[in-house]
Length: 445
Image (cartoon, rainbow, N blue to C red):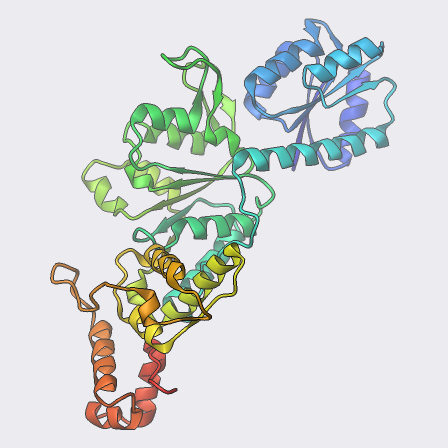
């Protein structure tokens, strides 16, 4: 619900406006002085302020100047009983959205408030992040049980507003899943702001997250809003949270639990309302035991945990993933997507993908540089990776070994399923079930 701050020393006028706007569905705070308005502004973070020009301890212009200095994004509508063109021009120059002369028509004011809030919402979206002008990638491509389970958990995530922790190896698509949750959740019209915590020093992490005031440290020549402030009302996505400096973690915890924070060099707290989505490839529970991650922060962020499986654990999903990635890459280049040959699908499916979906994308992007026709074949792929398990890699699962053996036998029999079934001592139907499970397509089928 949008929050309004009404500032007017005329109690009767203030009460009438507040009553009407509350009935219209807004949350309304009210103040009679600039001092009270500043206090509420800092603690409650209103979306819009309606301010009478003349107040006992100053004018609306004083509050406008402070609001512009805060870079907090609140919209301001100025009311006055002594409207002049000069005052209106000055108000707009100072950042007011509108300048209205009393008496105010209540229905017109409601329309103006709604339009102004819509404009503010759009500004926050643009300030939060540049959203790609195409359909977001689908994080649930594939038919494996792991993808189905992930889809069900993600559906629960979009129906609530609780913190989400996404686990998964590098390159599995944690950022894509985080954006999908935001774009399908209750805050979809608000900003999605992301920060990768890997490699950030304590000072840089604090400045990026919480912002700083001018003069707070050497080089702080201007006020800077932090990303948590930019994400107000929306989603803050912290990638590789396990790499966040230990000294910064309590400040993040405070902001999440109390809904307030301070910029570096600031003495007053600012209210903020964000949904946190965090992601990491690290074992946070193990880091807690080692004293490298705060247990109270872990308890706060893992209300709902989603785990992205590595690509090597779901080989049957490689083909639909490769097809979708290739289609997206070609659409961006304005060219039709080439067909992937069975040989290419086989090569891609057999590989272990240590870099997961990100590596798959890079391989296909490189292949497109050499693909001039409408078919992407083995020669065009230029995939020079060894398909055999790396001696230093993790031990393969029983499924991995079974799949490799089936592929090997099919090659020996020239892709003939009946002959392969006899060698493997399986019925024809059982072998077909395994081919479907592992995403193997025999030659000629």
